[in-house]
Length: 178
Image 1 (cartoon, one colour):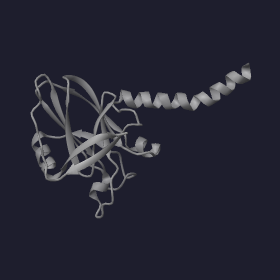
Image 2: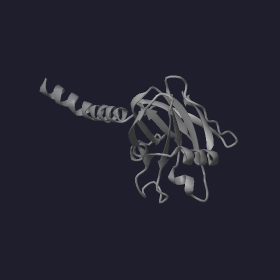
Image 3: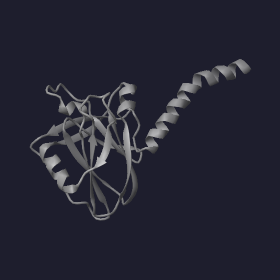
Image 4: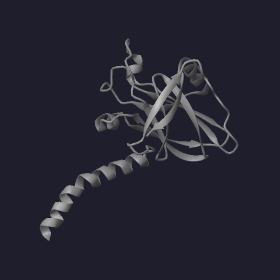
């Protein structure tokens, strides 16, 4: 009986660790790692909207290290989550927006990849408080040196600067890949 209990514990330990790690990521704002997006970008569209009544609006502008290289050959989507649910994804040099309820939130971003190491090394998060009727602008900032050249951050962006960044970016549309 003791052997069965020890074997069960031995095989369950990695699963418990994965659940613990996923719980921590969801607490940071990320959604489940199994959710993947198909992303399309349109350089001709630059929509902006006003928040709907009783809501705030969040714009996220992606900036990955490979946005700054001379030759660009594909970019894995960059997912964004709020309060444990993925809300969308950006492609190469792009942005999108989504509504949130007023209150405290956690915003998370990471590279969409099947390689767990890439997901973990690209995950960043920040907290923010939203007020109804307001728009908030965030940008991921990644050092140009490459994926191992420094830590990516989510930083707030001044509304005027956000307009400049969005004018130079493409607009992302996406759907969950099933």
